[in-house]
Length: 322
Image 1 (cartoon, rainbow, N blue to C red):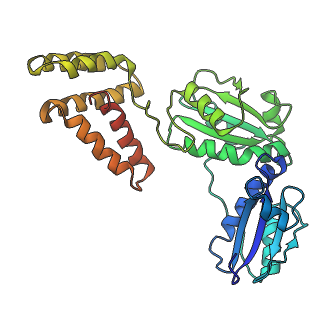
Image 2 (cartoon, one colour):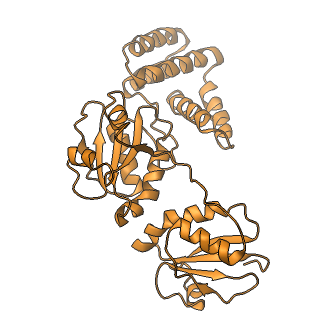
Image 3 (cartoon, rainbow, N blue to C red):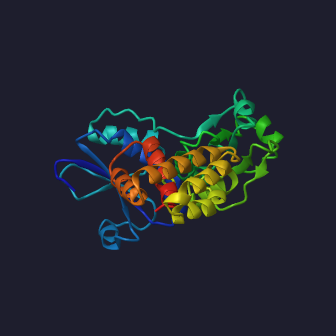
């Protein structure tokens, strides 16, 4: 710890329920002080750093300690475990005047005015969390649910939303909500809603949405290697790749006929298959391999998410031609 900075430290244990509950509040605190040069907000996982935690007398989790500038003699924080209370404490002890930062969210917030418009939209698949602001399990779920929403942020037909069903009791009652959090999935074809009964880890939600919505995302929101791949075209692509120069045009025509039959997202992916096949005919057998290598170099750089999706789709489809 730098002697020139004051520090608020959080000691956690990986599987601790109270730690998970505090996590989103502590994240808001850290975000608020991100640009404050005189203050450091940090945390230590006592599973991994037992000696450090023992050294500073940590015996329960989570423990929050305040380290004045230049001192390794901490003061225990005993206040409320909300972002607002923590910010007020650091301002008081550190002589700062930081306002709590609004953390950008990808979760769509529902209320009585927009619920039907968003949830009952037959062009969207919608996952809804019915929560209460005082609910501990809801607070534990919040950071995970936020990651789920962020992972599918670029999917136009997928909505990850929540509603305070303690405030909007009539909506909760309409959909049979009797405990918090309750999660319901409203697919395009069933706006009565289906109970979500899966696990509540990030991967559980991601796998559920991918299966139900036909998407191919990972927990970070990146497209998987399956994205864009159309199984109905794979045999024809193999025929195209193995065909000699004379037969290739006929193989391309058969591929074109099959693409014309595709519907929905597969139709869009089919056009990429056709463009890839045409490039292979124009530029030779090594085109697909060379283009995949070029795309890998681009994807290794820092590019915006929309471009990353476009290049990943192209790469996935080109793999069938390599």
